[in-house]
Image (cartoon, rainbow, N blue to C red):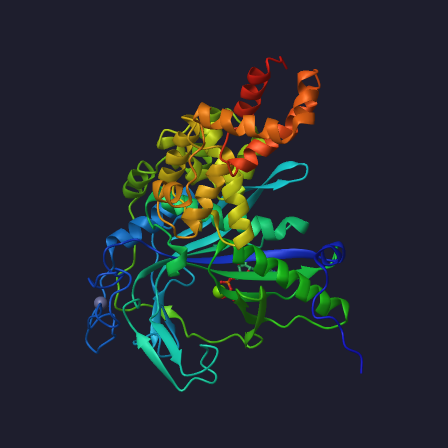
Length: 505
Ligand code: ADP
Ligand code: MG
Ligand code: ZN
């Protein structure tokens, strides 16, 4: 029996196959109440305390559409360059599973509220930024399901669990689903395009104020469809990796699925149309349910709700409420900060835009703000494999550190130690500086004492410098830095040294 590799190295996979992507993104809207009842939507309440007969599906209860839910969906549709339906209905998606107490979910099926739009995204390549237009198939409204917790097993999955708990607080929270048309022509950039698209969607929703998109609370979830075909062939069979809920995971899910499908196809196998589950820890996915036989949800128009028929006047009024969109805002900021396309794109791709903006708003100059978030802090995020925004250092703290550097109390090197201390939980900037004794030794007499000591310790070096060999100064400066545990400003030590010896550089 021969065994074949389960994955093919990415570069090889991309050389042999062309990927096609499709992204289905679900986002919880930030409305105060649920989609079809007046229950609150706040996150984190005790289980089953934010429920009523409507969202519990009790007999005789009647849903009513949340106007803000419709409004937010239309605004999102407009921002995505979609057409807005003049008339559309909700649909019942019937299925039997305890996460939905009604045994159906109210969704939209063949009559989405918004359709046929696009969103431009940019990714950074070795040859500079490259733009892709991602076409949007539809933006529709639906309601979220309840949350099941499978207890007693090792994996948290239903298989092997002893019992399951259900929380209906989430059931009925307004969701919009944004579905792309198949995204083709991305080649090796596919994982980056997928990530850039979800990032752009997130930023768009935040700027519209329709959702604050707290990804760590699961308010944005992405189903990632991937297929591969050989050049010139028809599109391949797609798999659908469900509920990918971080930007980084979207990128990894696409990449790992390309590597997996390439191995299957090149060993003569076939890709099965199935859902898959992505595992954050391994960066790989495992099979879920097969979709070879399409599930029959017996969709039909929701009889308990009136159709949604937004007047053209209302739609135009909503168009007028669209704020400066992220792409326009980026163009403006790039001009204001006076940086190159490339530097700006690096900053955007690194998730640093908002952080730099917030740091500048604190009063830090643009170049310094950029340097922190794309340098030291980006490195930390990368080392820890977390998003830049999740590095536990705030724009306000960066401002504080920068002020200490500017008034000479910290060197860059000491500042990095302050950041290390903040991350290690040693407190705020001042606490770390005090706790670690990090203030710069700027007292000239202390520095001169250390210089004199070093000159006494290394008389031969002192002679060389006096004789004009200024390169020899490094040894003395080094000794002083060591004596002050790195807390001196090396340039200043050097200047003082020459002054002491009466030598000019
Ligand atoms: P489903 O109900 O199975 O999730 P949808 O139509 O809601 O189907 O979404 C399918 C997603 O997959 C869409 O984004 C679509 O553009 C995309 N898609 C369709 N065909 C392919 C393919 N061959 N390869 C990759 N993605 C595809
Ligand atoms: Mg789907
Ligand atoms: Zn309710």
